[in-house]
Image (cartoon, rainbow, N blue to C red; front, side, top):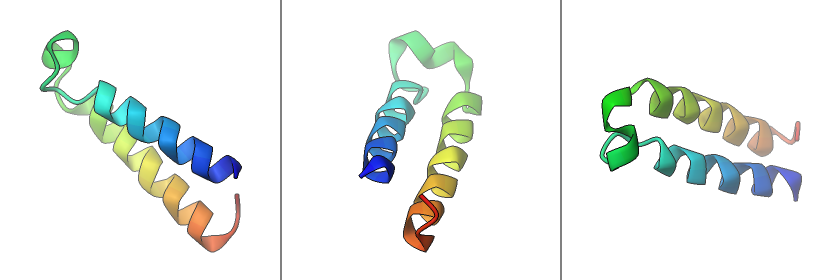
Length: 51
């Protein structure tokens, strides 16, 4: 249950920092790339049963 909630929150954060939005246009791809890496790590941990 906790893993699912974390994945949903990270997906929403990933959408919020995507560089096509007006507030994050000048940030570049750094924040969305970092959140994407965190999301992949979290998905792997959920699938292996560590979370």
